[in-house]
Image 1 (cartoon, one colour):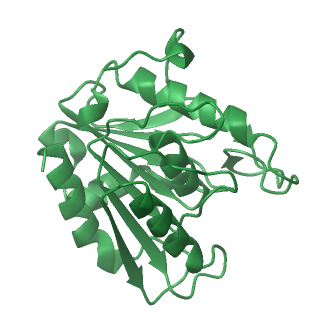
Image 2 (cartoon, rainbow, N blue to C red):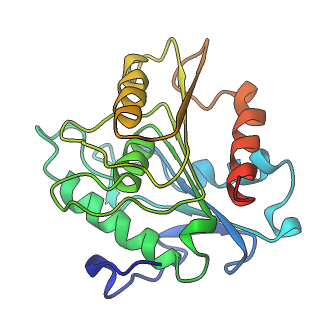
Image 3 (spheres, rainbow, N blue to C red):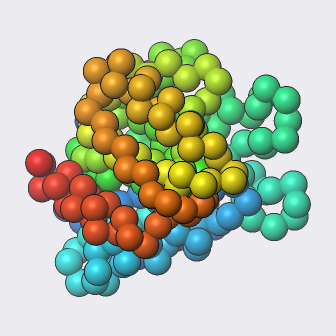
Amino acid sequence: MPTDPLAEVPPIEDDATALFAGPRQAESRLVLLHGWGADADDLLDLGAVLLDTDPAAIGLSVVALRAPLPHPAGMGRQWYDLQQPEWPQLPEARRALRRRLLALGASVPLEHTCLLGFSQGAAMAIDVATGCGPDATDPLPLAGLVACSGYPHPDWQPRTPRTEILLTHGEQDPVVPFAASAALERSLAEAGGSVRRIAFPGGHSIDPELIGPVREFLVRGWKGR
C-alpha cells in the first residue's frame, strides 16, 4: 500500500468511532459512510442485506464509520456542516477520512476493500477515493466504490480513479437533485474513470430493487473482476 503523510499516526477505530460486523481482520472488507444527520448504525445492517448472509459466515469485515462531528439538530452526526456557507469544515473532513481509510488498510488492504456511501457519505466517498482537492492526494486503490444519492463538492476535480464506480440515484430525490449524479458521472468519465449510473423511480434512499445489482458489483470487486 502506498505511503501517505496524512497516515503517519493512523487512528484506531473503536466502538465510539465505528461499528463492526464480521471479523476485524479478513481477506475482504466493506466500509460504509452514512449521510448527514444519520449515524453509523443506520448503515451497519446493510452489509448483511447486500450479501444476503451474515458477514461473519463468509469472513467479510464490515465497518460502518461514524462521522466525526455532531449534527446541529442535536441528533446524528455529520462529516461537515452543510449549513455553514462554503463548507469550511470540508478540507479537514477530507483529510480525516483519508487517514481513517488508510489506517483500516493496515488490517485489510484497500485493494480488497469496497467503499459505499449514502448522501453526504457518498459525496465524501467519491471525493476522497478519487484523490481530488487542494491536497492533490493520489486516488485510493479500492476494490470498488458505490455512491448512493451523492453529489459533487464545489471544488471537486477528480483524478483518474483506481477503481470501478457505481452510482445510484432516485429520479424523484427531494434532498439531493437527481442531476447531481449525472454531474458525478460526467466528471468521473472525463477523468478516465470506469463508472456506471443506475437511476430508479424513487426518492432519497438506497432502493431495495438495487440490492441485487449493488451486490453483484461488490462481489466482482472483491474477486478482482
